[in-house]
Amino acid sequence: MKKPLSILLASTLLATSISAMAETKVGFVYVGPKSDYGYNYAQDQGRLYLEEHLEDVETLYFENIPENADVQRVMERMIRSGVEIVFPTSYGYLDHALKVAEKYPDVHFAHSGGLKTSDNLMTYFAEIDQAMYLAGIAAGMTTETNKLGFIAAHPIPQVLRNINAFTRGARSVNPEVTTSVIWTSGWSDPSKESEAAEALIDNGADVLTGHVDSPINYVQVAEERGVYSVGYHADASKFAPEGWLVGAVWNWGPMMVDIVESVEDGTWESQHLRGDLLTGAAQLSDFGSAVSDDTIAEVEERRQMIMDEEYQVWAGPITGQDGKVIVAEGDTMTLQETEKMDFLVEGVEGRLP
Image (tube, rainbow, N blue to C red):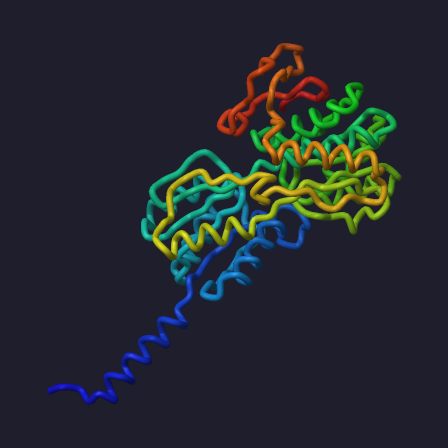
């Protein structure tokens, strides 16, 4: 018996309505609080951008999840709730994400950084060391003591790239500059970060920067002690209105949109997706009032050269701490080589732990 046309039309309209309301659920996992004005804040700004620019996307997030088996349980919980795309955003999540990805082959995973993939797990990152190099130029032209301080979490390639890029940028305009490094052995340890900042200033550093999850602690210490600061991950200038020079910041939103759209339209690939200054995934914050016009002009000129591919941050000669040439003049490190970086450059004081 044929159904009446009115019932067929009603069924078709209902199906169309349900399809229109269908949403892609996307989950995010953060190692720290999204309010840190640093790494997790920047990732969460990408999530908000995703919601704003894709009407068919629903997102959820978990914060303060450690880099251990807990993150596997969190990802599985999200997947059981209907999440189809997972963004595990911290360096130490990768091996855990690979295990969960193997268990759920129909779910797509986009991990922030790293050099491992699987059929349904890709990585995304950006060459923010370009921005740190430019920030180093600002530091090198501003310092009066020729001593810079760097608070670092772990000696992984991403951190070493930033220490080295910052130092190379500073020494390109001021060869007398040195960068002292103090390791905290943790992504978020406010007490250690503040103590490290105090120690670096006591040792003569008049510009502080770092690679820990949040720049708040060290820029506030710098502000209180009357020295300058360079931010990282996100614009934290409001915490240091007098001494802020500039910050190297992430802009994850457009890249996250591309990843989600690729899943939805069937063009998703297991790959290492990378951005840079040219794509806008890595950026500089606004300059602070403490930065001179001459310094701004120098940084902007060098930024344009990098974006025009007339200058490479990792072009030789590059010399290590021991004085040996690591990259000869005329050679340039590849992106794959920089993502495996295991050395500190000339001008850095402090050893790998």
